[in-house]
Image (cartoon, rainbow, N blue to C red; front, side):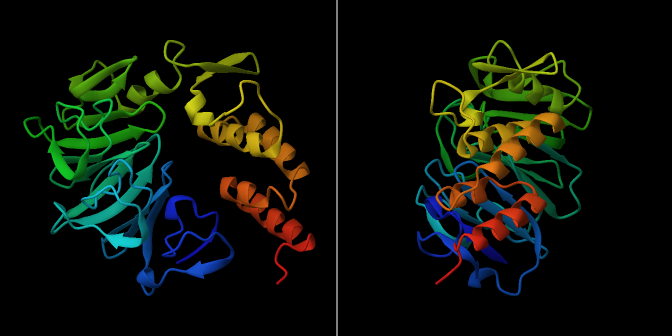
Length: 305
């Protein structure tokens, strides 16, 4: 397993804070086969091996790594607290749902700074930031390690978490969908039963809502309601520079807006320079685009000693 690029908050896991344009191997993971890998907004990283081990590193200001502290983790660290005897099958950061656990295994999803874990027995655990009640523990206290949620409910079969709105959702075996965290501008600190049919519907209510959004785009005559936090826009006016466009590209990818995604890619390709190379590398989401970036950076002398 090798890493390359910016090393914000030790997200590369190399043991130092240095960025690199040359791939570096992580010695802790040497010889281990990666089953699932995901990168959160912290930035923080979760990695599951084929052996069912869970490794984490990167930003940990809200205890989103679940290692029992709030200290940044500069190298991959094995997580075992409250997960003894469980094998992690899949990890996911961002607005995504995961369902269908295998026997003896755990699946994990991440919000901006919190995580949910679902065991094969249908038990739900949570840890990390809890400023909006997104852990579902009945209060707003952060948790440094996994704690069980919805213990008195029936078996949970599906879980989801959203980056921008600090929202969590879960679906039970009978089809009931619960939501908690930041819901319609209010903090819900305990799982709340909804009339929705899936966790996708639960997150969509917060992600593309004119009631909670603070920005909207018109694409082919249809409005997309978003949050500035998702775009990471620091300027009050939109920018067409590659560094700004990369944020819009992330949004277009999340909403599967192919036309908008292609326009963003074209702007980024035309604006690649040595000065913004690292920024664009960290934002690259397309394999062909990344390959072209490396070729152009090489022609500019970026990889010369």
